[in-house]
Image (tube, rainbow, N blue to C red; front, side, top):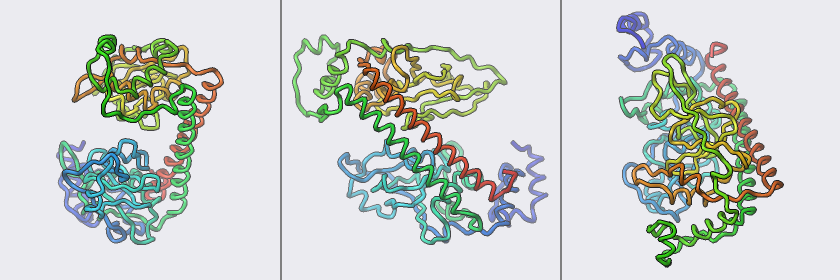
Length: 453
């Protein structure tokens, strides 16, 4: 942070050229930090274009929208913009009538989406696998209308420190920051750089991501087939009857629990007589924050739909009250909050010693490989059964006791070995994709600000 004196000095020192650098008036000292001014000076030294001169920029529909589970239209929100590409796993389905009334925000292949609220400034490119799709008001759709800017390069630029600086600088608000569409149109995009080399890196990363997803899908299909859950009829039955004796034995009176599809699945899963608690221990390595000692923290939002956990540095003084459990390599963490979201992850060696939220159950596999346990916990039917055991409505969570009591069948050695191999292949492809994206971002920053980046 700047002191008032530093702010005044900045205004005096740069008064003559600030309007040329920024083109607007700002009174907050952070906007005139030396590193900010340095980046803008480098940008101004390059051939840049105004984004709005080469792209149609709009947001999505505001307010109420109609959801239709049978609609083919994905409804994207800011949370769907992850890791440079669109993650549609949690996207609702938008009713066709709402979609047709908001065609301006209908996404097309090659569009770049920018989150303008929430996860501010993240960018993702739209690819054919997530279409058809529309979006809400917290996303700016950037539809390029000329060839001056390569969309695969643009997503790298916006995700680089240079692009994020522009997003941060034009955002407004206190509690909930926001980027206005007019400000997005004013973004300066360097075009006198090697866009092609950056674009190729991002395209390769996308292909590695697809390879990772294919490996994981194969592991999931193999496990489902081995457990006898692959051809299970999971259709929802609107009416069915159960004897009171069944309800009494289960200790449940809610109709959803007795849905035939869940009863059939639990019957198959329980044939081994084993539970999750028989193959994994609940690890409780209590974390005690210390002032002056930062740590790497994993919260629920840091677990991706691909089963990977990221972390961020937090100072000991600012440790959240929910930062409670130390994780070790080989642990499997699974969110006890809204388990239907499939938020489980395998702790990889580089995350050994991180701290995770109390919203996770930390499992240490004892009689099953961690990769197999990960895939099992992320099977959609298993997540639905876990969700049946949640309590509360605003913050539904499953107790660790109920989690450990969920039935599990341990596959034969040959199948487990193949699942492990496929998950590890998926992890390697995902890491390769991550490195390619980091290289793309580094190359953008180097082309803009040189070796100082």
